[in-house]
Length: 349
Image 1 (tube, one colour):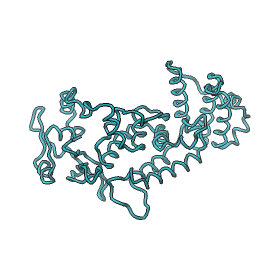
Image 2: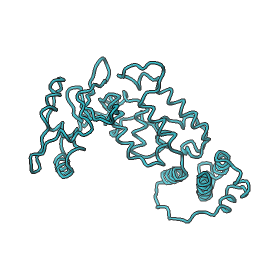
Image 3: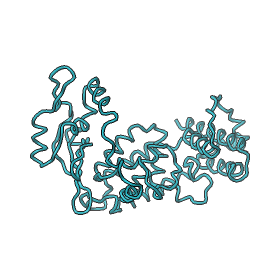
Image 4: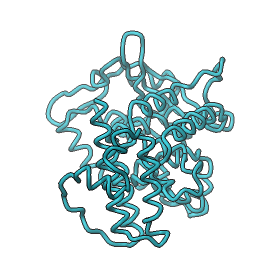
């Protein structure tokens, strides 16, 4: 991003009445917090402001530079290159990226651990948890406040709007089955199940309770002045657009058996410090899966997804390795639940 004396410039995709526009915005320090302002509407194609005279050269149209100067923004060509990098011709982008490799170190490189921790204390817990999942893909996040983490530096010295811009770009890489676990982790919904053995496996929890806690946390966040710092006040208690998109994402996706299996396997491998890739296996027959969960085929046919989850939780707790159970039995139980949950999903279509 463009960094200039307590301000950064970035491109933000914003919806207007006539469609999506790219707006050049600035995060700046004011009144003890980071705020943002619009610098220039670039329309629907930022590349229109890049001129290619020939060869591998390029420059920016004068009106872009004039708009920055009119707003009092100090800038350098290298800084604008970074902002417009995604919109450069692919060949030229590769060249620019190659020359940027090994460039100037991060401005935080010279900070001591104590100084960096002090800077990161100002980051919101919601942001830390979001970034941790996007970086590590883990629901169990551990403690993020006891020491500084380099991966959090990307959020420092940014307005709330620019931080959301960073997350929207990263969230676009999430696969469908990762969306709900991501939001479950970001809102720390596992804290509502402190004694539950499967609190970090949301697909195995009571779905109605998880939904209720999700909405409760979204409402808390919507009223949190620390999260909304630097933004204009909104009247009528309406949900902020930053959070509306998460409600849409949450209810447009589901907790899947694949996510449950991945979380279970990752936790099991991580706790034992070794890795063996899972072997591809054929689908487990329904009668075998029912037998492992201790139910009959007739009972399975009349069960709701919620009843099936309860049945799985009872069996899983009995076999969980952390409570002295057999890990092979626990994995078989999880696979059985995965297969039956998948069958329930197919029967709804």
